[in-house]
Amino acid sequence: MFWSVIGEKDEKVLEWRDGIRHGCNPQNDSNLWPPQTRNQVLEYQKWATSLVKKLLEVLLKGLNVNEIDESLEPLLMGTMAININYYPPCPNPSIAIGFHRHCDMSCITLLLQDDAGVLYVQGTNGDNWILVYPIKGDLAVNIGNSL
Image 1: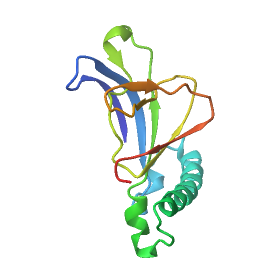
Image 2: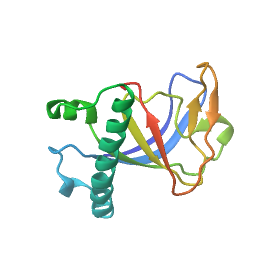
Image 3: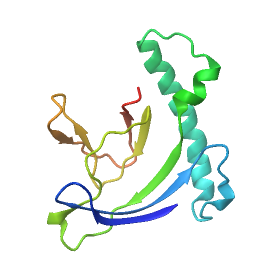
Image 4: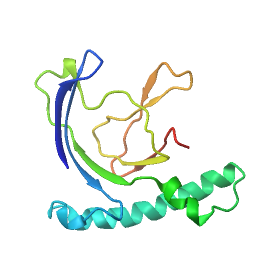
């Protein structure tokens, strides 16, 4: 799925971004994906799935869950999607941002960092947002609301 967002949400600033979403559930057919990204996305999907399983195992052990019932794995893994976002130059950046403040509803979100510096995390008191300074090529792991 392709999208372009140049519009207003409930806030006074506009979102300004383009993207491609690759649904990665088994029922999704990868030959419908753009051929320019298909092989890379399939490779990344395999790698990310393995990493998320390992992260969930470690996080759940921290919650004193020593063994995961295999029948619950699809519930924990949830719906996997790979989004490729592009933030084009904006003619008036004082009224636009790439993405509005939000909380991820997933268990885990993996964000491959570039040098754009667009990731903020919510502070511990819940009313401030802190810029995460990017290191190109690093992976940011976000624990979502579901966990």
